[in-house]
Length: 229
Ligand SMILES: [Zn+2]
Image (cartoon, rainbow, N blue to C red; front, side, top):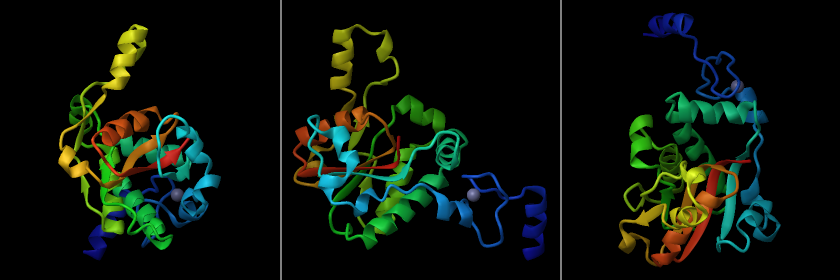
């Protein structure tokens, strides 16, 4: 079997999903050098009042904390990882990063801070196209490391948000108001929710999703993303 896998490695060398270099023996998905050099935000180690990511949600939605594993860097390792995760069908990256970040969070005392982990849902059409929701893959990895349940049944995306630019201001506002719908409010009530997505930019999507969860009576929301732009 070893000879066979060596042969396979010659024909299809396994490459690092962050830097595209060939992986060494014993390395998997992301090489040792990238693991050392990735731009970690370490937002989970900061006191919440000193965590700059929280400012994105200030005055918009009340979140306990806003966490991100990595800083988004264009044309670099983080963009490569996300590109492979979203467009190259490498769903395992979401799981890997989720477990990895979950382990870091656990070490920092986050193990008992959440009751439920939810990924920001994709529109059904988009999820069918891609075959999976990258946010759910991240959620699954986090769930395994933190030993907190996750679900992809609790909240759904009922409107695609990409067509907003062509709509009138009023229609746009209505669209933003109702992108998401909580399908199982009984699972949300009084729960401390960790809401996760792939990238944090303006925070508008997480905000819209979070508002629906708060309206359904959840106790608190912490947001976490793979990368923050
Ligand atoms: Zn690498």
